[in-house]
Amino acid sequence: MLPRLQNRVPPPLLCPSYTGRPTARRLEVTLTDDVLIVHGGTPLQGQIRVRGAKNLVSKAMVAALLGETPSHLYDVPGIRDVEVVRGLLELHGVKVSDGVEDGELVMDPTNVESASTDEINVHAGSSRIPILLCGPLLHRLGHAFIPDLGGCHIGPRPIDFHIRSLREFGAVVDKTPEGMHLSAPNGLHGAKLELPYPSVGATEQVLLTAVRAEGVTELRNAAIEPEIMDLICILQKMGAIITVHTDRVIEIQGVPRLTGYEHKPIPDRIEAASWAAAALATRGEIEVVGARQADMMTFLNVFRSIGGELKITDDRIARPGVTGAEGGIKFWHPGGELKAVALETDVHPGFMTDWQQPLVVALTQARGISIMHETVYEQRLGYTDALNSMGATIQVYRDCLGGTPCRFGRRNFMHSAVIAGPSKLHAADLVIPDLRAGFAHLIAALAAEGTSRVYGVNLIERGYEDFEAKLAALGAHVERP
Image 1: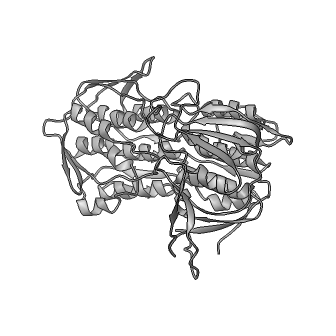
Image 2: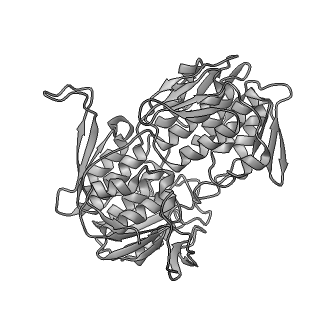
Image 3: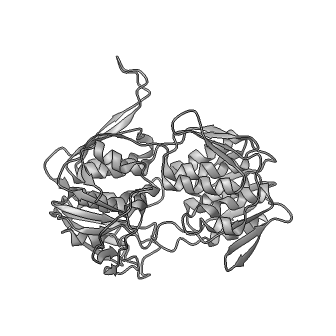
């Protein structure tokens, strides 16, 4: 756990509102909030390493429930989401232990058992992962309980399709005040499903449920993000039969049993892009060891279009005098002015929604008018209020300011941002509202002149491993009070 703020009561701070309105609300910060003091204005320079993708590792851990033998997952980051899923697995009788290698998890699901609702409710509100345990638990135990779900406050993120698809598989869902109780009195059977939107979470739900359901499942309009493809690789290692067709169609042929797996996940492309944006915003140079070009091609194109420079090191190429080298990507600000761009987020292979917050901070330093049209989450631009309080000039709009109208158009959501730059950022007291916006606020504090206080940095621990040590390695001047 991070150290707690002691011996001072900070004044009320501005925290971005996620109601879709471009206004700020007042938030009283208590003594239990984590705070980091950031002395900004220093270019970040140095080397850091990223491990397995947060958005894959937690799902890979859930997949271990489906096997009848132990699974070995490597390069697991030490983040809070991993601890949450580990706790959930252990509650259900999975023996989880650290392996021989650094970052290795061994998960033995031999003795899967039921957990009490009180024990499961301890995790209520801490993660959205519990909903993905439904299919595996129904296969292993015949029943499951799902508490209230948490995660970042970036929009409603409804689970209606999760429940609807589970019912299509044959699950019986009973909603109660404490959560949802599910059962499968006649087992689970394949189904034909079509997503109204290529949701990553809903695609994961179908995959984790269909692999052991009797018969064939066809999923149309599926998500095809790199993390989804890596999850399919894991399930195939376990014995699943999954075919990815064209036009976002995935076909799963159910099998009666699965075994454990050994897998090294793809690197975290979100963390890699976050550090790249930090290099650009602070006029620095950061080498991200472990970052992989194939998963970040869209981001890399945008990075170069803005005016950033990058060099890709491929670990498949032997280099004289270097043994066991790991590839990565070096990102740097080459000097001069950055250039404004017009972007819109989209599902893969489009520009990832989790890339936009840190990049917007860098765009405050670009000359001209940049546009960011958010099409994945309807309430993900509230963090810009805090950037404006630091000297940025950002205006949010209800209109679709991208190339094509999106599903949020004319629905009263502030989902487009216009960024005018360059802006000289100055220090401020900030409260972190969610994981990705929190890292964007941290980048802004690092790029700003003066000393900022960033409250609630414990949220960053959800997805960024050992970020304070990485900041220190890059020469940042940060400290605890």
